[in-house]
Amino acid sequence: MQRHRVLIAFGIAWLSALGLSWWVYKTSTAPPAPDVVRIVAAAKDLPIGKRLEPADLKMVAVERKDVPKGAFLKSSDIVDRAVAVAISASEAVLPGKLAGKGSGEGLTALIEPGMRAVSVQVNEISGVSGFIQPGTRVDVLFTRVFSNGDAATATILQNVKVIAYGRQLDPAAKLEARDPKPTVATLLVTQDQAEKLVLAEQRGRIQLVLRNTLDGVITESVGPVQSGDLGTQDPRRQRPDPAPVRTVAPVAPPAPKPEPRVAPEPRPEDPGLKVRIYRGDKVTEEAFK
Image (cartoon, rainbow, N blue to C red; front, side, top):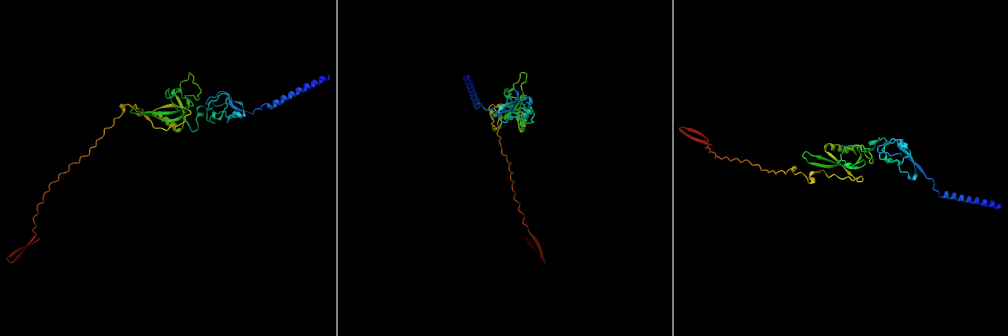
């Protein structure tokens, strides 16, 4: 009986030691509890121009070390602001993806302070066969045909951002089959550029030229390109060189012939003053000159 008790006590001690060893191992090797922060994320896909509502947002837990810079901690801070860059579901909402406070929604929210949005008419050619989309960058060429049939083309704007194509604001959105093909591109320009663009549409024809988004180089204008620069100018429209003007020296009128000189007639000799002197019966004359 005494031996049975010793075995039971030994078993309890062994189990206690085993349990204590397991507890020490778990507490010494288990990772610390993560430092979690709850941030604002999109509850669904949010398109460009969408005005945020409480139902569009949710809170997600993220470890503090993984919190994106500028992440919002309260959804009330961004309600009623518009989306400037498309946000996917469960993606963190960051300041760079939202328009400024009070900027409205839709296209208005995409117009940066000091800039203007102006629309130009495009077709299959001037719209680069539909490859121009919101977010792309373009140059604007202006072509004018003169009254004599000649034409000239010049680049009037460079590296201009397209913020809308038709009514499409999101470059990732796809047009449905029933939607009409866009015929208008909206460009983000300054006030001076907007005036130049509108005048160009009134005086001639414009063409959009697609460029790489990463290419921000602005080249200096070298002047308009004319028909003569292509080497295909119509010879019938070339004006012949004007014939040299032959200058003729004015002919002086003939000099008048000198009149013949007539020798003056000799004057009769002046006899002077004659005085007669009577002396008795003698008469004499004396001349005084």
